[in-house]
Length: 319
Ligand code: PLP
Image (tube, rainbow, N blue to C red; front, side, top):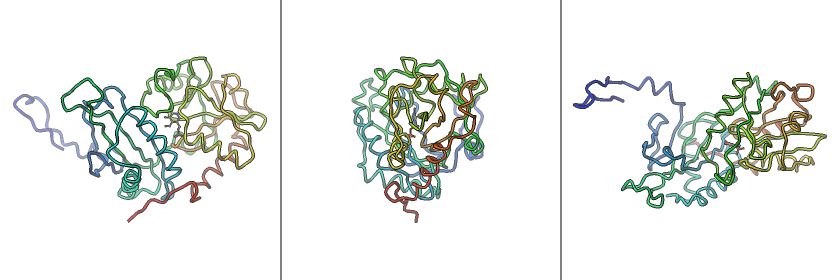
C-alpha cells in the first residue's frame, strides 16, 4: 500500500507497507462489508462506534482438526448480545454459519480462532443518535491461539490476583460479550509487575470475578466451583459443567473468595483460547503440592476428546 504525498501532506513519507503488513497480521481471512479479504486488508473506519465507544459485541469460536467446537452455543450467545444491544445483523444465522465456514476454508486453517463481531457502525449523517447508525458485521479466521503456552499447560500457570474491580454488571452486562477490557488489562500489568503470567480481578464485593479472556474454577474435596457474579458465562465454563455431569462430579457457580482459591486442591482457567488450563501458583502461594491436579487432567483429556464428537462439533466444509 502506498501513501501518496499530496499538496497538504508533502512532508509525509511515501510508505510501502506490504512487508510490514505481512509481519503484523496473522495469516487469515476476514469477511466485512460483503466481501472476503486477507486479514491485512480488513480495516474499520475510525468513526465506527465499535472503535470510538467500544459499542460492539462479539464472539469467538474455535476450529480444531477442521471442526467448529460448540458453534451453536457461541452463536446463541452472539445473537442474544446483538439483540440486547438493539443492533441488527444483515445476515441470518445460517448465512453467518456459511460465512464463518468460508473464512476458515479460505484461510486453509485446520486449527483456527474464529471471531464474529457486530459494531454499532456509523451514522451516514454523523448523528450522535445510536438508532441512526448502520451496524457493521465482521467475521474472521486466524490461527488458533491459547492463553497458556505448551510449557505453561504442562506445569500450570502462575496467576496474580489484582485488586482491580471488574466493571460492575449494573454498568455493563457481562453476559453480553464485550470489549470493555481496561480493568482486565490493568490487572494484567499488575500481574506482570509481580512476576506472574496472568491475572484475576475482583467483583464489586471483593470476590474473584474473572481474568483477561477466561473464567476460573477451583476444586476442593472433588467438588468444583466457579464465580457466579460479574463474569462472562464462558462457553468453555459451560463445557466444564457438561463434562462434570458426564463424569458425575459436582460443579456449582457461587461466590469465590481469594483465600478459598489459594486454599483449593486444584485451580484451572477456561477459555475458547486454550480450553482448560491448569494454575499451580496464585500470588506467592502454591496450589496444593504445586503440581497439575488429577481432576484438571481428567477434564482436559475429555475436553479435547469431545472435539471429534459430532454432538459437540461441526465440520468446516473445505473445498
Ligand atoms: N471472560 C471474558 C471476559 C472473556 O473475554 C472470555 C473469552 O474471551 C471468557 C471469560 C471465556 O469465555 P469462553 O469460554 O466462551 O471463551
